[in-house]
Amino acid sequence: MDAQTFQHLLRQMRNEYLQQLPERCDLLDSLILTLEKTPDERDAFNELFRGVHSLKGTGGTLGVGIITTICHQFETLLSEADARRDFGENFATRALAYVDLLRRIVALAQQENENYAPIESELEKLRLATLQSRKTGLIAESSSTMAGFYQHALQGLPLQLVVENNGLAALERLLHEPFDFVIAGREIDGLSGVALMSALRLNNTRNKDVAAILVTSTNETIPGCAEFNAIITRDQDLAANLLAAVQKLLLREAA
Image (tube, rainbow, N blue to C red):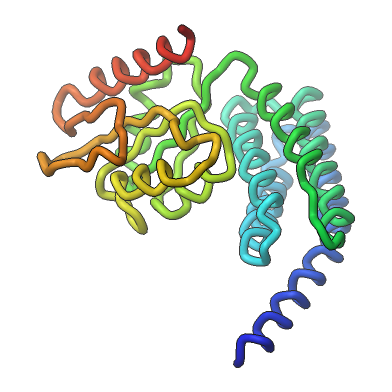
């Protein structure tokens, strides 16, 4: 397949995806309302989460990155609501607002000069409303055991933590979503923690100067371009040291 044919196929797939988006949003609306009325309906939750996850992956593949960003935040809302088993009116209002943003993408994506600034502004308002007074951190760690360990160590702090188990996926989120700090394992699939932060520092995004903590099991030299605020060794004091490092970052942000 030559390049021209491939690009034509991608455009066709993109158009079909956007044409199907309103119908898929209708289904998401229905599932959200079902959960609000019957919060123990696990099939509805699982279908809702799968629907958002599918939209997220396909949107990024077909060059509609704003959909991926919306769905990342939407998934975080779903995960937190599920952890609390709280699918009441507050959840439903915010979830439906995310679906409304997805609907608005269809018309904007058809324009010659796509301008998603109004969507991005609304998305930021939703993010802040969901966070309330919490700070948000990205954990980049391939080991689910270690990621869970970090989350447990920080559970007493007012945080919203999201996890990416691949360095390239973590970089993609850091390039498009705001975070207050990053915790990166040195050995991550796709892109090491050092390479992740070095690449981020080179990009002129809102996270270019984000605070970062490296968790490592080696004593190898770390290049200064990664600009880590703290380097923590995986040892018996890891939990305490990680907690102290994050608390220090939060105090710095508050100052």
